[in-house]
Image (cartoon, rainbow, N blue to C red; front, side, top):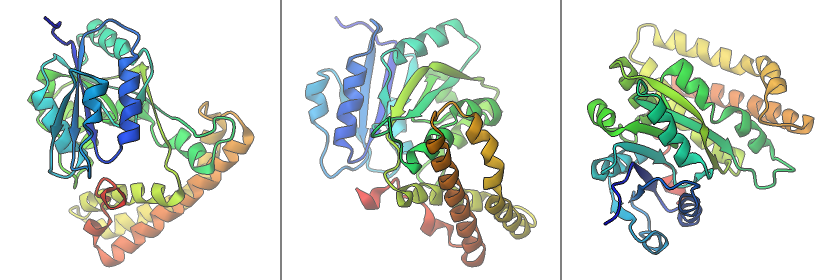
Length: 306
């Protein structure tokens, strides 16, 4: 009889078969003897990733047709049987010590209810980062900051006690920033969050500035939707756009101090890319103030490109 799993690893999937293969291979190779189950929840792929069942014989493959990673994760969490839930994106490759670090952390910290693990960029060529890779290495996954300053964890690498997840309730749909909203709801309810430095995963960078811009479109649209309901929202929104446009100069110190890139060429690339990103965001913010059509900007989990 198989041992009762200590961790349920929940992976939403949408048209990423090669990424999912690498993700599962890293889980199979975990350097520990901890019993865990893997639940892959397909979110409407053109082809169901049935190959996963041959890679991991006891893997559970489910399907959630409501668009969005939040609903997919919710279905996986509902089917999970372990006392710890570990949420992992299909394009993330877990370090060999990932699972052991999560279990050890929660065992040693009974006061912690949910936690975020480190997320790092896996460049195509570590010896020669592109501008987008250099930028994302510094800016895209500042998980420790999310945890300690903002009270949420990125769901690409997040773990929670199962009873806490059920008490907080499900992730939101595709029209929300589901990890931010869930984490802030949990902390508002009095649950405690932590950061697990040793639970590291690696994820590919965006392949182009256009792909990076689509990601920011979703963030800008959600920020607009939240601010639009507040007093003097237009004045505040335009002021925020002006600050955004002027902000790249203030990032020079952060880039110079970062340990996520090592070469001055990469630091220069990061500065040029962050300048592009901030100016793009400011332009999109001004466009929203003029047209007010935030829903058209929401990135449907890249569904149009898959």
